[in-house]
Amino acid sequence: MTDLDSAVWPMSVSRSAEGVLAIGGTDARALAAEYGTPQWVVDEADFRARATAFRESFEAAFAPLGAAVDVYYAGKAFLCTAVARWVSDEGLRLDTCTAGELAVAIRAGVPGAHIGVHGNNKSDGEIARALDYGVGRIVLDSTAEIARVADAAAERGIRAAVMLRITTGVHAGGHEFVATAHEDQKFGVSIAGGQALAALQGILARPELELLGIHCHIGSQIQDVAAFEATARRMLELRAALAATTGVLVPEVDLGGGYGISYRPGERGLPIELAAQAIAETVGTVCQELGTPVPRISIEPGRAIAGPSTFTLYRVGVVKPVTLEDGTVRMYVSVDGGMSDNPRPIMYGSEYTAVIANRVSRAAPVLCRVVGKHCESGDIVIRDIQLPGDIAPGDLLAVPGTGAYGRSMASNYNLVPRPPVVAVREHTSRVIVRRETVADLLALDVG
Ligand SMILES: *Cc1c(COP(=O)(O)O)cnc(C)c1O
Image (cartoon, rainbow, N blue to C red; front, side, top):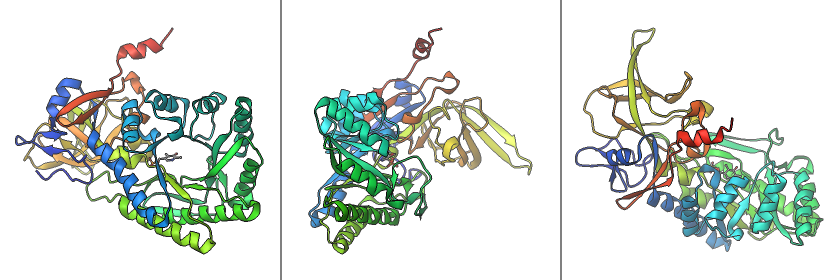
């Protein structure tokens, strides 16, 4: 069956002899029957393989430079204890950016040394928890945080390992990137006007802080490796400038996440092995130009690990033909979820694909719009898609590429309980995040 483009579906997905979508050897109809719809279905082997591919590709690319690489999975893409264990098993570390994400990492037993803590507005409680758990690094996001983290470390009689988030002027995402000198966004400290250099000197002046290095993250869904190369150059130049003014050559540089994936057939994600090689080559060249040794490198992929590992399984409800002004008909296909489980279309205009999961159809395709069940006309899952003309209430619809920023950004809009995440592996399935219930929602309402 050829309706499943391997670039957008988890690797174990196929069509069974009867034409039913199967994942990890488990039939989509059986998953729907056992766990209900909607549900997110994650292919555990696929998730682990993508995590490993990042680690191995970057380690291999940097090995000739004699540089070690740490891969931090960006937990904000999708985090639960099972996922924290998967990435730890595969030799990755974990990035968190709130007390909630840190709590999941701690519950999963991720060692403090393997946890990074981000955030542009960390609370005192978050800083305290991070220090008390002994996280490997806190990424300072502003000059104000220097004193706050240093004071909190002093109170505990410890030294806190920190990095400084740098805004490099390179912004990327989608198919383009721009590099500018000046910054107008909330994250980090700008290289422009010597601001980053001054902040780094401020960190070095506090003996309670151990400056591990400099950190950046330039955007998300980046398709063009040139954006990472431009960023690496700016970061390494800053590192050399700091060494020139203070004599301190920081040992680490973090180049962030943002690796793009394909959401629809024909789209091209960023090939990880090639990206790793290109970035390593740039780092090697620039370090040679600057006469500085190659730093330890870290990267922080989220979407490119979690996104393609998962699809959302919906049940089709109302199917309604709507005649447009030009006389053509658009079929509105309503599913039992929508913007509460996938806010990306309404937030970013993101586009997805879908297939009927419970059968193959030979009916001629018709123009469809897949919509959710929320009280909002913008509640669209897929704006324009050709689906078989016999699509009908009761069919299962699978939408791939929903593993990142789906469950993690899901809401309870219209008091819709959030769907479960079901992990499949070698003919078995299990719930790793259970379905929310109306009772859960009512429990929050204390009158
Ligand atoms: C969001 C984020 C990431 C991950 O981005 P992806 O696009 O999911 O790879 C990494 N690092 C930081 C600091 C982030 O904010």
